[in-house]
Length: 207
Image 1 (tube, rainbow, N blue to C red):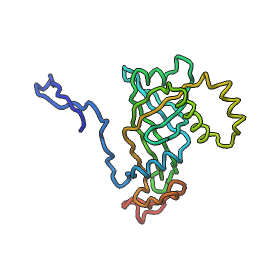
Image 2 (image 1 turned 90 degrees about the horizontal axis):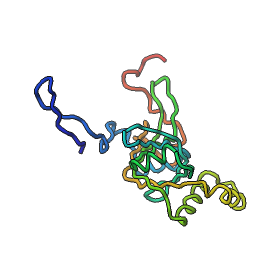
Image 3 (image 1 turned 30 degrees about the horizontal axis):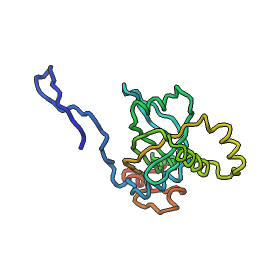
Image 4 (image 1 turned 180 degrees about the vertical axis):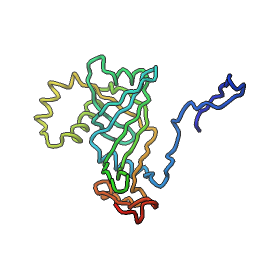
């Protein structure tokens, strides 16, 4: 349920409800909601995502990352040097979200966009176990640089691995959304434009 608090309205001498959180709010437009399986298809088809963090004062910060999904968590890497804004934010406030946009084709004649997106909510933590860190980096390389040889990867690891930090997001919720959710076809809708036609008020109106 949406958390609410009672606040006094001094000017009117009455109490009113003040909205405090939207964390558990569900999608309004149910016809566009994807299933969890479909949302995961969006995630797996999207090479990059925007990671959103906030510091303790609530200052937001969004930055692109190159994540990889494994089971119920997501790995991504960052610099191991101190002073990075997203790293400092996650240490102060581990609640994060990742936004994936698998496709976004503008349909000007319908005043719309054929889109497919997913938002992950979760808790971030640094990966400190060396075995898990190397495993995560292997997954990231397999996802984002599959053509590189083991020899090349080993050279990169030797020179850059000590300067790399790996973070893990424990998935708490996944929400997916698409204009063509009602006609979603696995393996097809993610790659092709789904022209769902015009809104009812545009039927018969010349382009």
